[in-house]
Length: 213
Image 1 (spheres, helix red, strand yellow):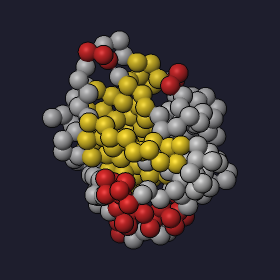
Image 2 (spheres, rainbow, N blue to C red):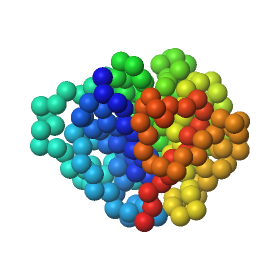
Image 3 (tube, one colour):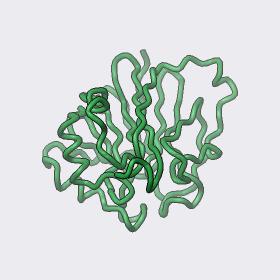
Image 4 (tube, rainbow, N blue to C red):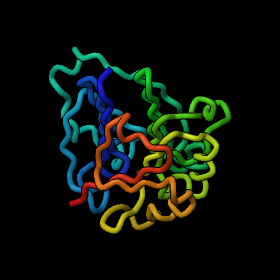
């Protein structure tokens, strides 16, 4: 089994790589998120949590010519949820995806807008790495996220979909609003946008450095 690499491209977009296979998650379209440049990525697969332009820009990801001949090292589980607290009536549906390489389980929560059901929580408990929106407004509010995280107990949570000093939507909260609810000793602000597992696996909340314009 090769090393697992995770790169944050800003907002909710990540590249997940292992054994020469790469997956881009939730790419954003050009100009859709203030402060972030245009994505021009290459991967073997692209997956989107829902159909909004800041999450579904598959046109910004070039698929490798040999992608179909590669073996995907991840078993992927989809959990169907909602982008709001009204069963999708406000903003539609949302797909949570769990990527399992046999050793680690990584969950991309998409734009989760309501708490998971009890059955869904059982599947999401004790995730190794959870990629979670923490800015609220379009998603669960920071206090709701913190309550859910305490219940699900992921080993490491990586923050996404929040407002920074130079990026993000004005209506969503800065990452500090969520971090203020966490134990300070378990918050790690890293000066890099990529991590390698297991070397960089930490117990707590991780804030990666966003690649801005």
